[in-house]
Amino acid sequence: MTTHSGSVLELDGVYQSYGDTAVVKGLSFALARGSIGCLLGPSGCGKTTVLRCVAGFEAIRAGEIRINGKRMSASGLLVPPEHRHIGMVFQDYALFPHLSVQQNVTFGLRGLARTERDARAAKLIELVGLGGLAASFPHELSGGQQQRVALARALAPEPDLLLLDEPFSNLDTELRQRLSLEVRDIIKRSNTTALLVTHDQQEAFAIADEIGIMHQGEIEQWDSAYNLYHRPGSRFIADFVGQGVFVPGEVMSGRQVRIELGVLNGVIPGACGESCESCGKGCHVDVLLRPDDIIHDDASKVQAEVMHKAFRGADILYTLKLSSGRSVLALVPSHHNHSVGEKIGIRLDVDHVVTFQTGAAQLQPYRL
Image 1 (tube, rainbow, N blue to C red):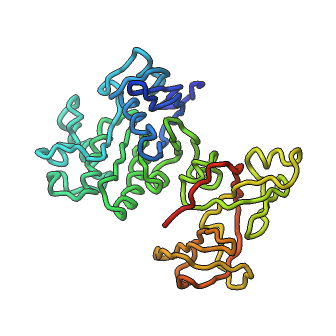
Image 2 (tube, one colour):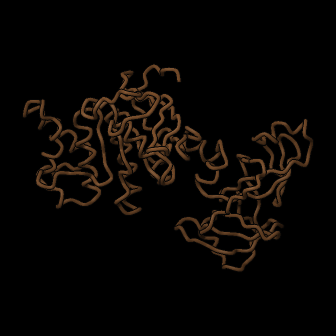
Image 3 (cartoon, rainbow, N blue to C red):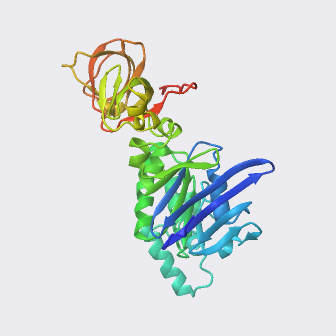
């Protein structure tokens, strides 16, 4: 991998294994200064191991890890964590219970004069929205407030790189969503470069500028949340990110594919769509349909039966059975409240056509 000018963090062909089991397989990516990256994937994909290697908690078998252009990890080289100028936010906060908020934040600033330490801590405590709580102790704070203290403490030494390991996993869903946005704002205002590890897609989408989807020790796609959702680079990503089902389709040309609900127009990605002129019409593909691709339309002649409904406040997620017996999902404004067993009119509204060659191993449709 070519060195990226201005990159704070670079991983170049990193391998890591435990015994004979390869956990990280040739990983390469870079984070520009001031950007927030995320490693997103299911449990066991290797994302936490990558974070531990970046932090210096684990050596790597091959490749290089560089921070601000300096080699921190390579075969036979391991710069210890305390010499990497990184900040770390753990999922369990790791606050000192016997220290106040201010004392926790100033803990890593021992090299500064007292007045400097106090001024820096006051600035960070205010930045994370805890003004007035500097004298409080961790047990007097809520989970969200404790997480803010952990963030302020990690940012206090002005690290080159901030690492966040599943930072909201101990919080309830509503607080996690709100705090995700607040943490992104805090990191951006402090102009800190950050790498987040999580299995929570909404958390990743809310915080990160760029996301790497990890699968079996490799990054399958490093991209924006928008592209991961609408332009997935692999079948695993299409199935892992967001919700959706695959339905069979027949390629009519490089720009058209027919499915049960009608004809989709757009560039047909994948090997079959690209070579359609040479292989002819009739190639079979699997077409990804997202809940927002199916529109409720009373005037439509195409009918589908409501099999299941999940109320989500402003919307209802319907599982609908087509005439063939296949199921699709539709996200419908909640004032269209239909009963299970009722038939409703639907139509297609697909902006991004996502297809994959039909394989022997069929993906299971999304289940509520």
